[in-house]
Image (cartoon, rainbow, N blue to C red):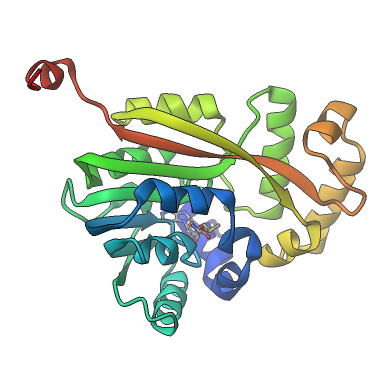
Length: 266
Ligand SMILES: C[S@@+](CC[C@H](N)C(=O)[O-])C[C@H]1O[C@@H](n2cnc3c(N)ncnc32)[C@H](O)[C@@H]1O
């Protein structure tokens, strides 16, 4: 069998599903999107990056607040959908850029706000993607990271990653909050506020959005039926397979070195 790269697997999964991600209510709404908007506030001079923009819900939310939004994704089909929807909504300050998170083509310190939502768990190189976001952000910029997070505990972590991978072979890893903190620090970010949420995933739409093959759906259902009480309770597995995951919104700034700190005025 011919093997493809991980990025090709992402495109295989996402290129034909752009409309589904635009229409998905799980993606179009959320307390995290509301908080993101409050954190950014009205900043007409600011330039923002929505990395792994998918159907564009972060870009649409930010477009009314900042001067310009760059919606960036690996998938050209996602970007075409975002551009068409932006035109429909009269949002003329969204531009699209096709790129991998791990190799952003922009100059350093280009953005006042960098954000990514429900994308980082697909990146072939999480560490490199976060390092690119740190590079792309201005020294006084704001970074906001939103994603499904692993509960950390191996019992629960293995279960979550297994279900995610069976549903979508372009899944890499839901990092735990501890992984996020450590990787953000290594990339040069200083972590600030962390907000956690619970997100119920209705089984039918969750499977249909990715057109998960029947054999994998059966494996997911079988795993769910055999889950221990700890797993069942944590993920609130329902009779129809719907379940609830933990998500987080993490705010970060650029780390200020001791040398920079000592040169700041008192
Ligand atoms: C679930 S969708 C994103 C949802 C969207 N951000 C939202 O809030 O509705 C995941 C997106 O990440 C993109 N993606 C995956 N790996 C990527 C990478 N390495 N670089 C850039 N985009 C990537 C996919 O193409 C897909 O469009």
